[in-house]
Length: 295
Ligand code: NAD
Image 1 (tube, rainbow, N blue to C red):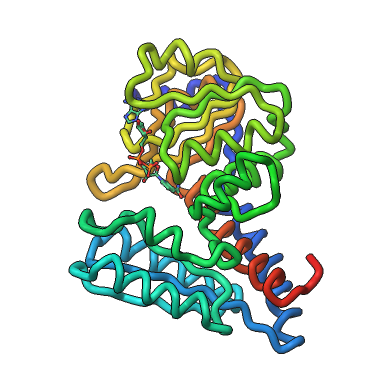
Image 2 (image 1 turned 90 degrees about the horizontal axis):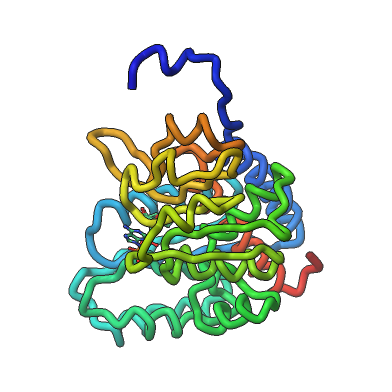
């Protein structure tokens, strides 16, 4: 992009500042954790990390650090890459029975030889702070209270904090994974949006994206969403995280799309920090439910 493009005086979308909102939410959580501690209750999160994947290690460190910031007790179970599914399930059963632990998170992806669905199903539903247990997924689809996966929950929280209603809006989600796109769909349908969900086999992606009042992208392909794929004035939420040299970028061509959208999330500093804030929020909620403290 030519230098003058940055100074063309044209319209520019408002940033949806996930980093700032997440800090505010962490402040709220810290206060509530302080109140619980006065009653002798310390929320506890167990993170299970299998193997040596560097990205997984980074995410786990970020989660532990965030717990510390708000006063949530956290421990990380580091398990060898070679662990068998049954042995991993035994670790989870121990955590299910631990009174110090209110939330259990298994960092994904797990090594290929492990049966991920069996592992996720082994987590006690009341400690399933990632919301990946089929019971909680089912609750989400039915519009009932349960634990909702942190990334889509972070997206709706961000929209709420900017008072951007989804009711009656045409929303397009690009990416249909179990952890991002599908629960995102559930949350939005429950909030009365009209939702279109696209994936790798969608025939003409642009046809779908350009109709959207709100475009939510979680694929993992830098530059997938270009300016011509976005409706004028759309709200654009970029969930993607891609490494480009030594920096992180999303799935959206940020600089150009920002001139067409009304609101846009940056990467980094958008959905990522909101995801972590929602993990803390879910852990606090699990603690209150387990200890029967009014919400
Ligand atoms: P995934 O690989 O499980 O799923 C990707 C989805 O994108 C699939 O549904 C696939 O069909 C679809 N897809 C792939 N290529 C496509 C194309 N060309 N056009 C349309 N759809 C296409 O990935 P995931 O775990 O859901 O993660 C997606 C992205 O979101 C990654 O970049 C990941 O790092 C990021 N992510 C970010 C956060 C966060 O907190 N910000 C959390 C989770 C995932």
